[in-house]
Image (cartoon, rainbow, N blue to C red; front, side, top):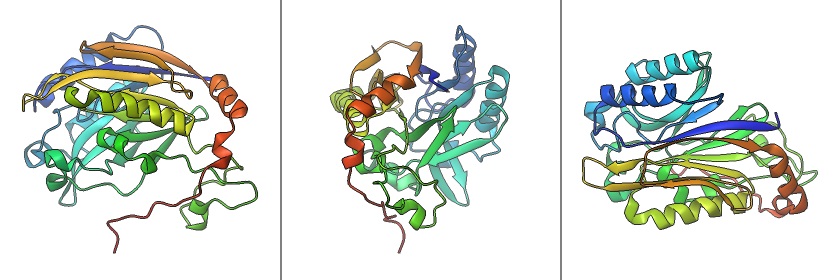
Length: 286
């Protein structure tokens, strides 16, 4: 429980070509040397960041989700990344957290990127997803969510005060005063090179303000709209120190995160106990 091993895959993507992308990613996953527990793929890893969900969307019983189930089972890993999903007449940019036993969690991107028209094609999500692995808690988010710190913000409960989420009947376990909601904040992305300074800066800011590890996995190469992506995937520690980054090149990187370092930072710098209490309302509800 003291360590967690994660592999990031920074890759170019074949524009709107599911078959080729899945074949390519399977080869990359098979090439991973040594034991890993979680493999992270970019946003919309089977298609690229496309605004054509009516042509590319799948159901949760579709080819890409079935591929994720097979790979997770065969490799005995947790596999995650986002996919275009159709459900009850709506389209979602959905992160899937696939376990080796075929069970999965889902997170629908909360903040649709209006600058590229994502809000015109996709329905925003309403709930965060915090997964649990070996006692580690991982907050799963997608690309543009990075610009909205409240959506990622730790919400620890002060001593002796009930958790507001539990008061609201959401069924979350009660947390001790100053205890963090999560330990790792994970972003999958198709973040363009022209705004990579924001990407790198905000990833570090999220780590520092939430006293957590941050993992950001981006793509490289040009997409079908001739938008260039420089990658700059990163792993950052709770003090904001960059443990890994890679620019422009495709890269498969495995890193083991140490829980004792996380706990040392939070103990020596107990800033979370002073955090503001808040609840996030759903702007889509009437």
